[in-house]
Length: 371
Ligand code: F6P
Image (cartoon, rainbow, N blue to C red; front, side):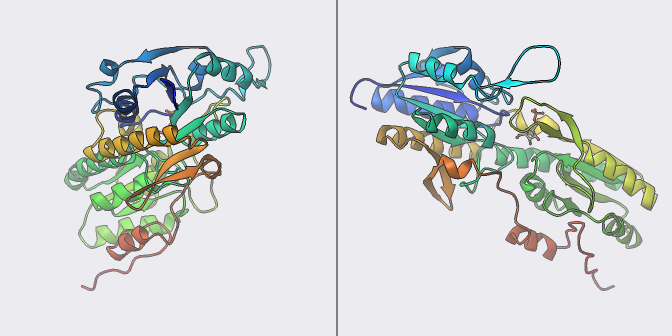
C-alpha cells in the first residue's frame, strides 16, 4: 500500500464482548504505525448497503478496550446477496450485492476488514470472490467458527455462564431442587461444556450428544438417594432429546441462520420434575452472556487478532481470516471458514475429563462411587 491508504471496517452478526477491543486494535495500529485512514461502516452489511459510515479517528477508538457491544453497531440479518423485498405476500429476496460493492468502491478504501461470525464471514467470502479486498476477523461467543481454535467473546460468555451456575448452586442446595441453566451457543456446545466443567455441574447437555431422559432423571434420583438433595444441570440452547428436535424460539427468515433457538431448559425442567417429582427451576442466561465488559483474556485475544489483521492487509493477504491454532496466529482462507460450524467432537478430551469426574452428558449411565 504505497499511497496514504484507507481501510474500512465493519462488525456483523450478534455482538459479543471484545468487539470494541478489536476495532481499537485495528484502528490504532493502522493510524499509528501506517498513517492509514479508517472508515467505520455502521450496522454491518446494512450500512454498506445503505451508505452509512463515518471516519474513525484516534480519539474515537481510545478508551474502548473494556467497552461491551460495538461502537459501529451491527446486524445479524443484513445480507446484501439476499435482501428481503418489501411487498405483500410471501417473503422474496433480491441480490443487491452490486449496490454494496459500488458503495464500497465509493469509499476509496484499499481493504474491508469484516469482523463477524460464520454468517458475516461467509458473506465476506462472497464479496472476496466478487473482487473486494477482504480481511476477516472471527468473532462470536459460540466459539464455532471453522479454522480457529478460539474466538474472542467466548471466554467472557463462559465466565458469565459459570457465574450464573455458581449462583444457582446455593439456592438449589437450600431448596433441594434441580436447577437448570440454559446457555447460548447455537448448534455448538462449547459454552455449556466449558461452563459446566468450570462450575462442577452434575449434568451437561450439548447439541452434539442427544440426551436420554431416563439417564438424566437417573442422575437426579441417584444424587437424591445418596443424600445430595440437589442437582445442577447446564443445557445448551441447541440440545435435544434422542429422537427429538431442537427447541426453536423464533424464525427470522431474512437471517443467514434463520432459527433462533431457546426454551429447551423449560422443556427439560418439566420432564425432570414430571419423572422424578423433584422441584425444578430453569434460568435462561440469554443475552447476558453477550453483554458487558470483556474478560482480560478476550481483550488480549482481540488485540492480537486486530493487530495481525492490519499486518495481513498491508501484506495484501486478502481473502483470509486471522485464526488461532494453539498459541499461534494463522491466516485461514475465508473459503474454509464458509464451510459450516465447528462443533464439539464427541471424543473431545474435555468431554473425557468431565466424564472422569462424574459429569453426566445424558448418554451414558455414570459409575457410582462405592459406599
Ligand atoms: O451467535 C451468537 C448468538 O448469541 C447465539 O448463541 C444465539 O443463538 C443467537 O446469537 C441469538 O441471536 P439473537 O441475538 O438474534 O437473539
